[in-house]
Length: 153
Image (cartoon, rainbow, N blue to C red; front, side, top):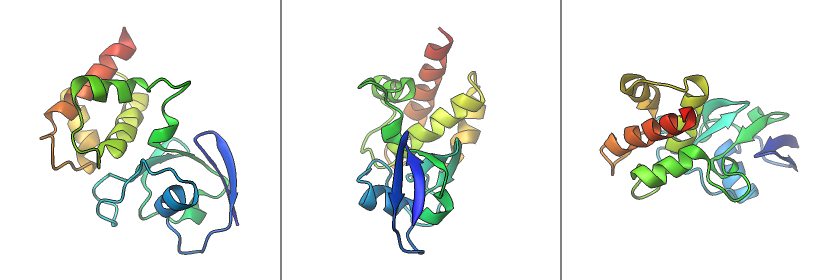
């Protein structure tokens, strides 16, 4: 039995000891935003925040999140309004197929929480753990830059 708070909602779940946090989120809680891309924690598609820190949920056991706070891409929007990072990805075209987008958005939010005014080099360095086969990364960097500029305005 684990207790965790996901996107502000408390949950108590009975999960097998081998259940990953990603599978718990997707199959036990129905939060399908986070995706499994590689299954070994290197592509970033499954990135979530655990107590505000980025983790690869495909390699973290659900039990690791016991008594902790998890934020998924679904938890970023508030009152039916996209989070500024989500909106910037829409406006600047920082996504195409959508497989990596949830992890990119969660990682970008974590970056802007840590550094509200990153340079392009700092964006590239932070986002190195998020792989994308579609965009060529330019639009992702642009989306993060737009979100940063809007937060300063």
